[in-house]
Length: 360
Image (cartoon, rainbow, N blue to C red; front, side):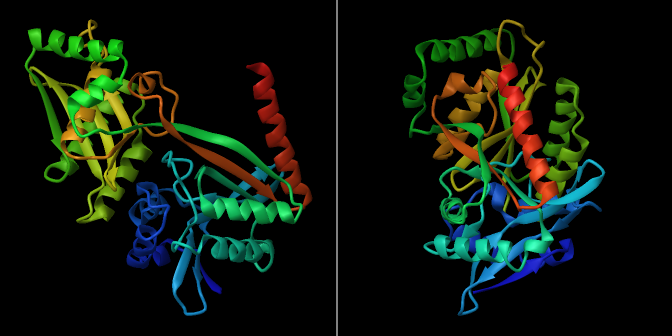
């Protein structure tokens, strides 16, 4: 096996087809691992303290069999600086289900090669590795951690995020019968209440008008969340531009008498519709929950559009659990080399996490 390392954003721009081709044939395929997402993040958030560290792994037949979508970042430890390896897409864009993706059946082979490469030839290019929100079921990670333990090296594993998900049925009534009777009753009641005084409409943008819909959504988002989200807006606009004909965005607005009272920004990929951002006018009608009404209507629309999964993504917001008790878990892995500064950095992390636990 051999590897090539991409360190420049300009180099990353040229590998869209081979990146997405490998990802599509892997077991890790996710919108957060698409080239369009990674490249847009790099365009927006790589700076003087960050450098791409994307490792492309080839087999002996010169076939691309693995990609580690990483970057290194300079982190202050007292007056000194260490270099930390992170996933592209973290932390600014709250990416989930991250992974080193490989050709199917090559996970162990690529994992072993990358482990030896990192701790061998590349050992002078990093001090610690922080892999946030990695897929808990990642076969790459399973093999990587197994080899790490065999070598007796220390690592820290913490639960990353819980992402509530719904396995969508084929019909609306089946879905409403699955959720609690109180939730189903409240959803229908809120819809009736709003329809008594307002003309209710859902407007969905997935292709035509999507660029203007993004602008309208972030305007609403700034008004209703008191957070302008300029960096996130810039990222989403780049993601939309880089997606070309492959559109991964869908925006849904809830209108009452022509007034926009809520909006959801969804990501869509592989028959999964994922709720990424929400903006709601909570004061429009205090008798209803406009946010939950909009979520319910969008889930029903997703069923009608034959999506198979509705994913709320990371977060413990209470409203998510009104609709489902199922979910997916991610993990965060932290590894350091046996050098003074990285070890000090790890000990500070452990102490900080322990203090948080004690103060709960």
